[in-house]
Image 1 (cartoon, one colour):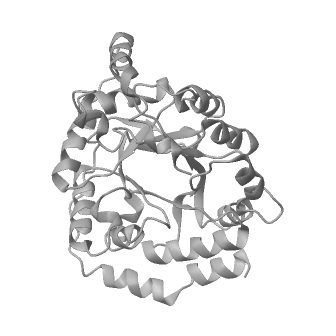
Image 2 (cartoon, rainbow, N blue to C red):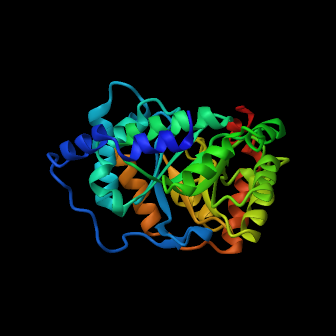
Length: 317
């Protein structure tokens, strides 16, 4: 299998054209033409996006089989709210397929990002082909190397037959616009990835408890990203709700407010269990104002005793 052969099969696919034609049968929803949230430029991509996007993983309808109606309702609600950054991955269950049932009608209005966890060129190409079919599109705004955690993984990715070859070939052929690297395990690895390759974006775990971890993402990755003008998308912002449910923070306004007030963070993605939760998070983003240094310090003081419980995902490899 070669990248050219795969790309040709995707871009010229009659099946893809038929699926897109079938999409027109769905009633188009009204998408806001003006900004509904504060917006920022996503680093070197030059793309201006709202500060809040929809995550496609977690304990949500998007990533769970048998919950298609709920998933579609959530994606449609996100579009109505003016959300334009949609995050998913090849490994997120039916997430790509669920998004692919709604987003094609609005393709030119959104920023669509998916990921591959394959470390070899051919394996990455196969996942890219599958992702495009599931998402019902012939291009991605961002294709990211998923969950990069170890130096050995970086060596494999950048090896003679590594996944970076598929990334470069896909970008050269116009199948992807921007490249990215993601991780929530080891910030030194992500920082090294940004030094070794001119990625356009990085998706990393940053929340209000991160600063107390012995190896914080905010202190390690953000300076490198700023130096190289890499677009930074934050994830794990409320620590799957633990920061708020435990009473460490008062609400999403503090969890999201803290992260979006960090220098170098351009936007965040948060998954939602219900449309109501999504709408609540949107209202927080809509009302966002950068926190003062005093507010940031006060939040950090509150998370100091609970950082281990709220960075539990750092152990995932």
